[in-house]
Structures are given as C-alpha cells and as structure tokens.
Image 1: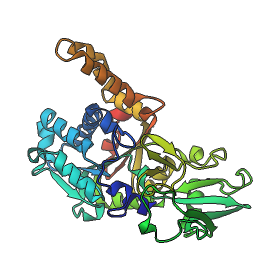
Image 2 (image 1 turned 180 degrees about the vertical axis):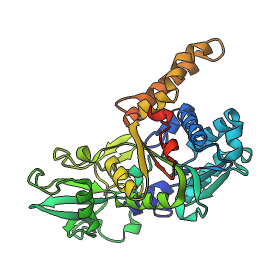
Image 3 (image 1 turned 60 degrees about the vertical axis):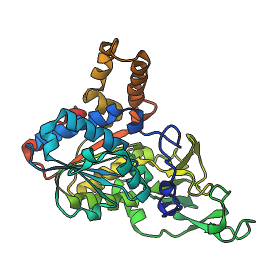
Image 4 (image 1 turned 120 degrees about the horizontal axis):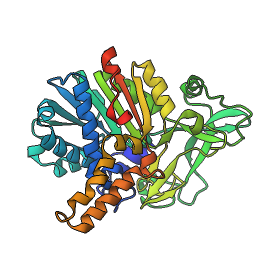
Length: 376
C-alpha cells in the first residue's frame, strides 16, 4: 500500500496530476469551502489564548497535500487576527515532493515568507513545539496491515505475483491502469504487535463471534505517528479529523470485510490490486486506538466529536444565518453556492460524520479545565 501511494514517480500521490478535487478522484473539506479552514482558524486562536498567548506559537499541518487548507487558513488568520499572526510559525509536513511543489505554487511569497516552513516528515522538526499539530484525512491514507481469520487462527494477508497470470513478468513494464496480476497469500503475522494491538484495545479477536474468513485492518503506522507527534509536541494540542470508528464498531463481527476501499473518479472500488498508482487506497481510522495509544505517549484526550458539531460550535451555523445579509452585495448564485457548501461540511451522511479528536500534552490543570469551543 505504501508503494502504491507514495513510491517516487510511480505512487498515486506522486503523480503529476492532482488527484484531489472535483476533477480528481475525491473531495476533501478544504476543497468544499474556505469556511472549513476559517473555522479551524477560530479554534487555533482559542488554543493560543488558552495557552496564555505565547510569543511563539506553531501550527503543524501533517499531510498538507496540495496546500488548499494552508492557503485559506493563513489568509484568514493574517486578515482577522494580527496579534496571533505575529506569533505564528506554520510548518507544512508533506512527504510527497509533488504536493510540496504544488503548495509553493499556490501560496504567494507575501503570505509564506517568514511564516511557512516545508518539511517532508516530523523528524525534520528539531525544536520542541508549543502550539497545535493537526491533520485532515491523514490517518486514512497511512498503509495498513490486513489480517484474516482462517480456521480460528489470525493470519496476515500478503501480496504476491501470480505466476499463472498472462501478465506475470516485470511489473515496471505494465501500464499503470492495467489489470494487476497480484494475488493474496496468507501467512503468520509479520509482527507480534498485531495481536498485541487487539489485546490492548480489549477486542476479543479471534473468537467464535467472528466468522471464518473475517478480515480487517490494523494501522500500525498511526501508532508510530503518534509517538513522533508526542516527541515533537512539548505543550499544546493534537487535532485529528478523519473518517473512522471507535474500535467496538470498527472490529464488529458484522463488519466482516474491513474498511479498505479504493477511489477513482469519485467511484469506490474494492480491489487494491488493479490500477496500481492510479487509484487512492484508504482505510478508516480507529479512534479508540488513537486515544488509547496516545495516552501511552502522554497525549490526553480532551474530546471526540463529529465534524458537524465541531464546526457548528465554531460558528458555521452563524455563517449560514448571516448569508441573507449578503444579498445585494454578492451575486445570488455565489450565495446559494456557499450555502450548499456549508451544508456539505455538515452533511450527517458525508463530511459531517467525520470524527474530530482533540488531544493535549503539557497543559496545566487550569488549562485542561478550559473547554475548547469546538468541543462544547
């Protein structure tokens, strides 16, 4: 999965074409409306205030993609909160060189000079951070381990080349969109951490409650990421937005095929072994794991809510109510389009059901006692 998504010059996110947006394969909240970034900005300003308005406050966007969120967020903060802007450093973490280049093309120098730093990974950040590390749809793009119950035993799903296939040969010579000659093979777990993962979360797996052939995913990369975040964050917050489930729903016996899906041209597909490098591969986030393993690394959970409630608490409903005041000042079609965009961000069957997890580290007792607006 890591190769399919991130292999230089071949991986999905390394493609010269932008896969994100209405003309791409999927749409994320930053592409829907600048309101998403602006409302996040309201939360970041409050975090800065809770921490006592430190002279140096760092925002770290992890998995920053093509830079739409950063562009809208920085534009809003500079215009609306000059005092906060004067304390701000913005670090854009994006492993794809193609995406980092797009960001630099999107954002003008007068917005980024002296404020924005680009890095490919958290390990490039040397200074301890006071501020907030945040991500939107990052966890779901991390490579996962796939496991399956076979005859009461938990096995890992591996990928091999089908030697019987007519296309078996040098994979580098195959067209990107060709049907891939890969097959699944089952074997022992590649690491005991996979079994320990379920034990830590209290998931009785495997037991008689789970049918033979039950398969699911484990995101060990997210645990490594949590460790790196905790090492970087000295005082402040971790904010994670993604689609996912708590563990008891993620690993419910009725969810027998897991959550791994592929996306191409806004259509969900179920085979990760076709159109290699030309389709997105994704698996849902396990919010229980993020909280449980985060606690191990001193990341205390402040709250878990849905994006619809989070944005509403930050003022999205006020923006909806105030739209009629724009009549006579803006084109009616633009007002209607913005109304639709705001509803899309709150759609309970779409983006609105995304989880928003806020964790903290290094806060005083009084700081922890101040409820963040997005979680109220």
